[in-house]
Image (tube, rainbow, N blue to C red; front, top):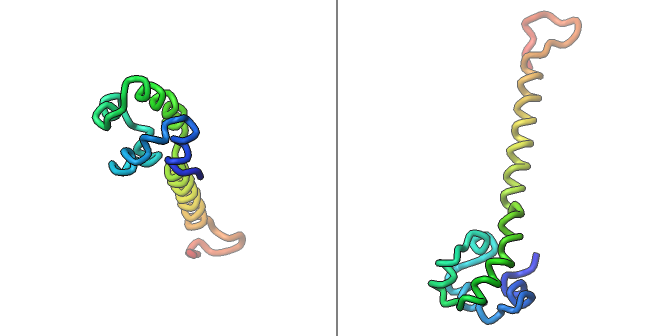
Length: 100
C-alpha cells in the first residue's frame, strides 16, 4: 500500500504532506476529513476542493482493517454454527447420551 505522502504527490498536493503528518492524519483519518478540517489545517479553497474530490473514492472503499474485521466476524460466526451443530448432532448408531 502506498503512503499518504506518495498519494498526495500523485494528486499534486505533496506540499501538504508535512501538515497532515504533524496532525497524525493517515488514510483512515483522511477519508473522514471535512472541509472545515482542511480549512483549519490551512489549505486554501482550491486545494481543499481537490483533496476532498480525491478523498471521496477512499471513503467509499472499506478500509483493510474493516474488511479484515468483517471477515473475522464472519468466520467466527460460521465456526459458532458448526460447533453448535456438532454439539447437538448424534453419531449414527450411538446412544442419546453422546456428547463431544
